Amino acid sequence: MEEVTNHPSPLLLPQLGEAGRGLEGYGSHRIEYIDAMRGFTMILVVLNHVAGFCLNIDGATPSLNTYFYEFRMPLFFFVSGFVLYKADVTWNLTHSVRFLGKKFPVQIISTCIFFLAFTYVSHQSLKENLWSDSKGGYWFTYTLFVYFILYSLARLSALGLKLHGWKEDVLMVVAGFAMFVVTIPSVMEKLPVGADVLSLLGCKHWCYFVYFIFGTLARKYFTRFSSLLDGRALLTVCLLLFFGLNIFRETVISSHYQLFRLLTAFTGITIVLAFFRSRAGLFNKQTIVGNALCYIGRRTLDIYFLHYFLLPLNLSAVAQVFHQHPMPVLEFFVSFSISLLIIAICLIISNLLRLSPVLARWLFGVRK
Image 1: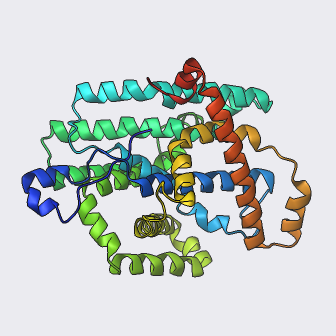
Image 2 (image 1 turned 90 degrees about the vertical axis):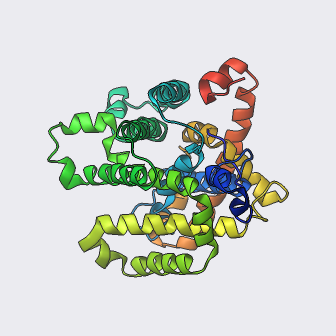
Image 3 (image 1 turned 120 degrees about the horizontal axis):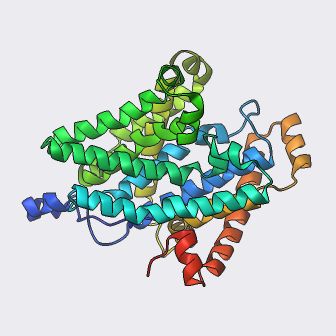
């Protein structure tokens, strides 16, 4: 996982002049509330899987998880893009090849190891899992590697076309939205590629690339973006949009589903980021909650790889109660509690596996 860094104070940037502009969105220390936010997002991921796999909560059952779904994965990819961006890096061919070579072992090899192990343990079909969009659950790290490739190609294109500043930003935004449009079902049906090949490539999940790009741009213009987050106008608009759209959810989805997806994702990301930024004093290593979330945020890869092995719990009796008598708030607390237990076990297993340098390297990409 990339290191999250602090940034120069917005008050200091004007004094730094050109050097300050070069440092915008870049520094040398981790931003703890970003680590904590990543930990929070990881909890939401596990919570979703607990609700779906253990309690069989689906779209037909009233659940708070329905609203978390709208921004959970977009937020995860936003953070991935945010921590990737470095202001002093030139994305030429040499850097791109070196970067992808560094990422390949953990994004692909480690993923394949856990994918094969989980497929075997859960007695699933290797062929069916491989040719499915979800890859047996291990689609995220593979998709993130695809994003690294797409991002590298976009940056190389900007370099080749000599696009700088806002022109390069426009190219990146166009690339992000292009992936979103391509993954719309009605558009995918018209592609000159078979559905089985699209599933093998996991193209369905390429729609999140637009949020990955959003994260890189938020990091690039972090000082300006932070001033918007700290103000009330942007947050107020996002809150009104997010909750307004969900109040009229069924009506909006029936006629403007893709727009609903985009708006709830972008506003959800902004709301969560604004909350964690405004409570930065709580979400740091000096507090119990902050330290726990930061630790989870730094071990998201380990938790993601391991938590699937702990999901097949026999909770049919509890699931039946929630299906017969929907109680969204109680169901949330049950799912949340089980999620924390699973994460705690994952972290224990992770620390044990990391005792071996060989396992730490090949399973979690730990480098000396």
